[in-house]
Structures are given as structure tokens and as C-alpha cells.
Image (tube, rainbow over all chains, first blue to last red):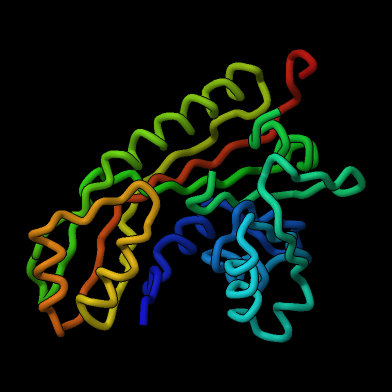
Length: 97
Length: 131
């Protein structure tokens, strides 16, 4: 089974620079959830999107029920991002732009 | 409007953007603590250069300020060579040299791919002009 960043080097580097606690997080091109669980465990809310429905399904499946309650998923690319009534505190672009 | 401008519009004033990208043109592939070859990701590095050019445009336009930049190594682990080969063969802009593909196909031991990753922390600024 493929295991990405088992040692959590990437998430530790992010956590060392910025706190996600209680923040509204935009997970840009979330893929199969590379950073989604990390964000969902800390943030008040997460909006995670990716152009691939298959990736979104995998990212959704990788979360705990508690994490899932804080995450909204959507299938689209960054250029279709259109949430005029929302503003996010942090955008995470993990291997995605 | 390209993606970074869309993201800028979705962020609150003083929000932060965290961008991580793998940068290695030839990430090491390791098994039993020995390098068995490298992937060819030179095409990917060209893609990153294009991304960097778009970032430079948004910095010049005053949409974001670069606050910090750091690098580290991220490891992708696989149970065996064939699993690694199957996965990396579909990575974007990645070529598996034939010699490495043959070694992976014959490797039953665990395999890892080591990638240099750049993390950039940017602050959402107010643009100096409309876009």
C-alpha cells in the first residue's frame, strides 16, 4: 500500500509556520486528501475541492466521522472557485497549483 | 482570471496561503537503504517554473507577499517495487527510466521515493490596482 509522508514531515513543516486551529481553511486541489485530514483535525471548517470526483471520494473516505463534519467537498478546479459569501483564513495548496 | 487570483478573491484580508511543491528533477528511489535509480521529473520541473511565473505575477501585482520559504524531504513508501512502479507511472510529468522500471518490477522489498519539497508561506495583500 502506498503511504505518503508517513513521518508527517510536510504537515509538521506547515504546523511550524502557521496555526490552523479554529480557522476557515480552503484546501486547494485536495487530491486524495494529502492535507485534508491534517486540516480537518485542527480547523473550524474546511472547504476541499479537486477536479477529480475519484480523488474527492478517496479524500472523503480517508477522514474520520468527526473530521467529516467539518469538511465540505466539491468537484471543480481552482478557476471555477466561486464562493462569493465566504472568506477563508488559510489556503492550503499541497502539490496542487 | 487564473487560479491564484481566484484564491486571492476567496481569502479574507490578511489571510495566509501555504504552497508546497515537489521540486526534484530526479527524485531518488531507494530499497533496502540503497538507491536503485531516479525518476525523471524534468518535465514536472518545467511545470513548476510556469507556476512560479504565475506566482511572480501575483506578487508583482501586490496580491500576495512572500513571508517565508523552507525546504524538506517527503518520502512516499510502497510495499514493493511493482506497486511503486504502478503508482509513479501515472504521476504527472514523470518518466520512469527503463533500467529503473526493470529493477522495480523485480523488487519484492519495500521501496521509497524521496522528493525535495519547497514550502512557501504567503500573506494575502490588497492589490495596488484592480484586476
